[in-house]
Image 1 (cartoon, rainbow, N blue to C red):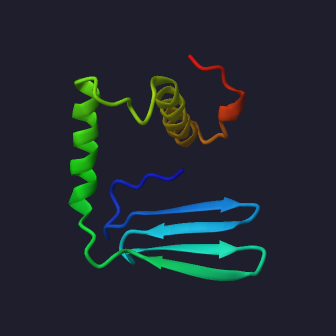
Image 2 (cartoon, helix red, strand yellow):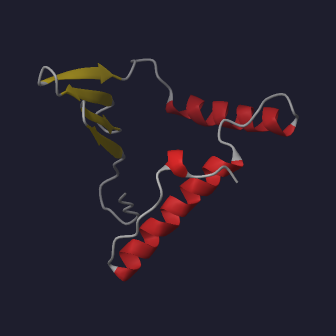
Length: 112
C-alpha cells in the first residue's frame, strides 16, 4: 500500500495481483484493465462517457444519511472498519520503522 500525498502530478490508481490475473484502475486514463493469466490477454473497460465523478460522493452521502435515519444498513460494518484501520496503521508504522508488519487474513479474524 503506497500513499503519496505530495506528488507533483495528480494521479490515482490501483493494481491488484492474483493467481488468475491482474486488475488495474487508472483515474487519469479513465479505464480499468484486466489481464487474464489463462489466455495472456488484456481486456479494457473504459469509463462511460457520461460518467460524473461527483455522483459517487453524492450517493455516498445519501447512503450515510439513510443509515443515520435507520433506513439502510451500513455497507461497511464496524468490524470491517476496524480491520481497514489496522491495515492503514500497520502501513504507516511499517514505513516509519522500515520493517514488514504482518496482519492476520480477514477470514481468520474473529468479528469484534
